[in-house]
Each structure stands twice: as structure tokens, then as C-alpha cells.
Image (cartoon, rainbow, N blue to C red; front, side):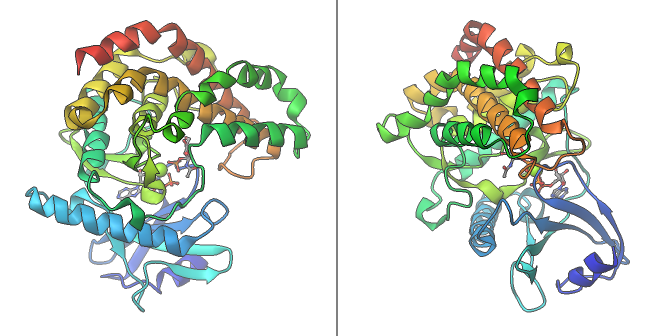
Amino acid sequence: MQRELEILSNFALDGTPVSMKPLGCGHINSTYLVKCDNGNKYNFQKINHNVFKDVEALMNNIDSVTSFLKEKTVANGGDPMRETLTVVKTKDGKNFYKENDDAYWRVYLFVDDVITLQVIENPEHFYYAGKAFGNFQKLLADFPASKLAETIPNFHNTVSRYADFERQIAENRSGRADEAKEEIAFAREYKWLSEQLYPLIEKGELPLRVTHNDTKLNNVLLDKETGKPVCVIDLDTVMPGLSLYDYGDSMRFGTNPAAEDEKDLSKVYSDLVLFEEYTKGFLEECGSALTKKEIELLPISALVMTYECGIRFLADFVDGDHYFHTERPEHNLDRARTQFKLVKDMESKLPEMKAIVAKYI
Ligand code: ADP
Ligand code: GN1
Ligand code: MG
């Protein structure tokens, strides 16, 4: 950790760091919790430059979004230091530190007395996650979208994602495509899912909004006593997108009572009780702003986002694990399998999912 401590010394921290330990289970950045001698805590992150090519644009997005959210939080009588991420600047006033052309770092204030969940144990927590992401979208409804750089071009463009998938399968850089024959066949059979949402933007049938785009359960901090939402984090992909991306991606991760990389697929399914909890929370916050078409597509968005994630994991497995952090050679394949199992399960539950959405509009 000596090198990390040296890098950290470039930031204007209040206190002297006394410990640093890895934090959380994100697939993209490397995160550390830093504790200082005076009790102050910080989140110190190495930004994944392979994923985020333009770190300056990324951090400028985060600066504008967090400043905007802080103003809204104050106006709503909330605590801006707790309910929104706070970027800690470097000693020379920058919002990130460049170690070299491949290594970029940032610091946020650590939000304390919270929990981050990897799976839901108490259904009410998922209701609160729905409220958190619904409220996030509501708060950003009048954010000037033109201020935002596209940090990952075509991030949820499922049409180009599918084309990338076929290209990576054809290239087969890992030589492992044969190990994933069944999953590749599944992805091809369900290609129609990649054509459900994205083409409707071009046709003008779905509005672009400022969205989070990575609404995994572990990207919201909940109060450790009450479970109520405290802060939406992981703002790297806040960009213009569809409300359906945020709703669907939450469903993908959070309605599954098993882990995203569970090997025993009999444990993997989409729990309708959880589906209902999130739907209720999300629609209570931003449902009145959604168009008829958006509401109609909420259930299918869960399948689309799950399918998209599945083909991304599968493509990365065949490509040689260059994108997502992995801990074992089959990790991305295991993840793709859970996503495809969920797609199948959700497909069989579409009528019930539609009935649940209808209850809350
Ligand atoms: P990644 O992009 O790799 O997912 P995140 O920004 O989501 O990284 O951070 C990873 C984890 O670290 C989160 O899931 C959460 O548990 C924890 N975390 C991140 N930021 C904070 C914060 N400001 N306060 C408290 N915990 C945090
Ligand atoms: C990544 O960073 P993290 O772990 O919150 C990924 C998401 C995927 C998710 C799958 C920038 O999210 O798009 O849905 O893994 N983030 C990026 O778990 O690619
Ligand atoms: Mg995260």
C-alpha cells in the first residue's frame, strides 16, 4: 500500500491516513476505505482507464452532477454531505490525480453508517432502492443534459452491443468460444431482445432523460438502522439514457435472490415479491413523469437489461476477460449463465410483471 499512500498524499485530506483497505465488490474501479487519525474517512478509487477513456470529461460530469444534486438536496431540506457524493480535490485543486497515462485516482468523502447490499434479504430494502433511483431520476429531470459528456459511447445501445458481441465471438481472442457454445446459442436465439428499446429512441417513441445507467443494488447506500435511502453512488455512467435502463438494470440484479455469479443455477430466478417492491418505490418517485410508452415497456426492460449484461459478460469471457474484474477463469461465463437463466425466468413471468406494474400507475 506504500505506493497508494504516496498517491493519496496528493489529495487535500483533513487528517493523516492511518489505514487503507479494499472496499466493496464493484466490477470496474478499485476502491479503498481510508481512515485518518482524526476519525475522518475517505473513499479512495483508482478509476478504470481501460473503461473510461476520458477521465477529465468523466470527472467534470461528476462535478456538475454532484453540485446540481447538492443544491437540490439543500432546497429539499436534506444533508448535502450525506445524500450526495462529495469529490475531495487534490492539493492543486483538481478533481482527480493522474499518476501516469494509465493510472488515474480520485477521492470521495466516505458516507458512514450505511449498508450496501449484494443481495436482498429484507424486501423493504428493495422498495427503498426503488425510491432512491426513482428520486435520483426525478432530481435530475431538469439537469442540462448538454453539459454531460458520454463517458462510455453506446453504453446501453443494445444494437451495437449485439454487433460487438458477434465480433468478439468471431475473433475469439481467448480461444474459449467452444466452452460457451450453449450460451452463445442462447444469445443468438434471444437477439430480438436487443431490438426492443434502443431503436425506439431513433423513432422518437422514447424520451432521452438524464439517467444513472448502472443501478445495481450495491450502487445505493442505505441507512444502516432504518434501511432508508441515503445516497446514490457510482456516478461514472450518469449520461442521457432511458428511464427503462435504470428500472430494468435494478430488476436484473436485485430481484435475483442469488449472487450474480452463482454457479448453482437452481438458486437463480426473478422474485416477483422483490419485483413488486422495487416497482412500487420507483414509480412512487418518478412514475408520474413517465410516458405511456415507457410504462408499457417497464416489464420487458428487465429482460432487455438482463440480456444485455449477459451478452457483455459472455463476450468478455470469449475475449479473455479484459473488461470486468474477475477472480477465477470461468467468472464471466458463470455471470453470463445467471443472466440468461434470469432472462428465461422473467420471460415466463411477463404477464405477472405487467400486472404488478399496472397496480402502481
Ligand atoms: P465500482 O464502479 O467499481 O462499482 P463504486 O463506486 O460503486 O465502484 O464503489 C464500490 C463500493 O464501495 C460500493 O458498492 C460501496 O459499497 C462502497 N462505496 C463507494 N463509495 C462510497 C462512499 N462514498 N461511502 C461509502 N461507501 C462507498
Ligand atoms: C459494472 O461498476 P459496477 O460493478 O457497479 C458495469 C455495469 C454492469 C455491472 C454488472 C461501467 O458495474 O454496466 O451492469 O458491472 N459498469 C460499467 O454487474 O461497465
Ligand atoms: Mg458500483
